[in-house]
Length: 101
Image (cartoon, rainbow, N blue to C red; front, side):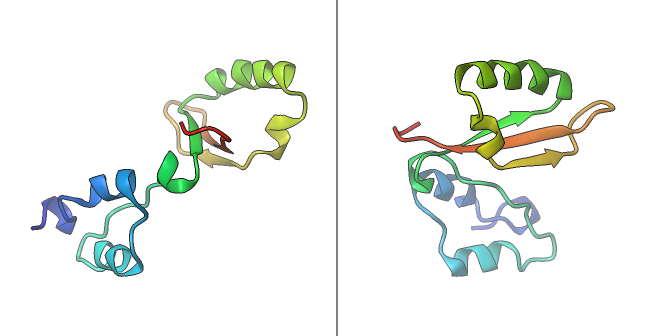
């Protein structure tokens, strides 16, 4: 059964339970209105977590706290600039946790 924009209704639930198969991903992106890409987090991804900052003024104080708690850690984590909200760009910071999140 297909939902709006050609996305299977179950697609949003698959990432929470298991990694999508290649054929599922191809089907999701082959319609007239392909869906966006999301990052699966939690146990299905090996405990990947994403810190999503919409505003740079939120990221800066957080990064200071992380540096104080674990010097050098933030420099080892993948970071991606995002469109964000407002005049500044946002940022995603990715981390894999030892324990399930």
